[in-house]
Length: 370
Image: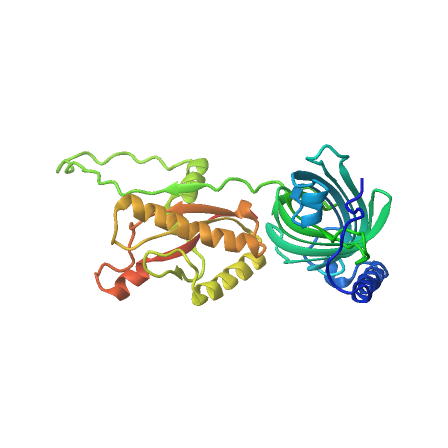
């Protein structure tokens, strides 16, 4: 059954209505005739330009003739699909097919709609959470009638994987009827539903390996006083294997790499001076390929509890490690150590003293054997 029937009319002159319909059809032809092909901007930072979307929604008539005289006042079901092509990261021309069914609460036949359309979608360039809006125009087949259709919608895509997104969509559709005597007014209905988008591309990359965080604590050891008259012990020289082990674990044998990265009070945010230092560290590690393992040691000043300072120093070291990994340093060459307020470089209680203790330093733990 159609969304229109013979009834009294009210509204604008027929000439104005025909002019509006012609303008909508011209707009549809212009959009459908737009060049479909990838551009350089469409490929930058995106997957393949093809976009395939499906949506399921519920809607209700808000036009008086359809909700009252035809009895389509209850909720209807809308299904649709869209195929788009990303000309730009934010612009996608698309073709779509929408269907709708509205049951009649007066015992009449269900009102149906089949509408092929063309339009454009505009969205942000973010991939994790992407708001968008679209507008489409086309022809609506409703019963034995063919009428112009206009549709507009907004939605949000939440990233499920590298190729799929899911999110809510809200829209409005209108079927235009001529202002002739005996025709109903335009059929207007808002709708709300969900949308699924597929974007061809490679699968998600594997997650990075878990970070290793070492925690150091100071331990006081009571050493008994030496016997004043012991016999000098016979010393046996250590084996070569023991010497290699001592070289690897003794802290005083570690080589410090460049200057430390300093932080503000109670913060793990990188400052501009610290970022400049990290560029030097990344450049140095890129040149010195013989360095196999670097320990990133985070510290805090003496203010705050011990557990909190260890956690704060771990966040500072993690922030530095992530920055280096994002700028080309292999994660396998990096190791974390959260040392809290231990090993201060300044023992005073002034702010300049505290500032020097809020730091991250880099120590070479292992070199490639020649």
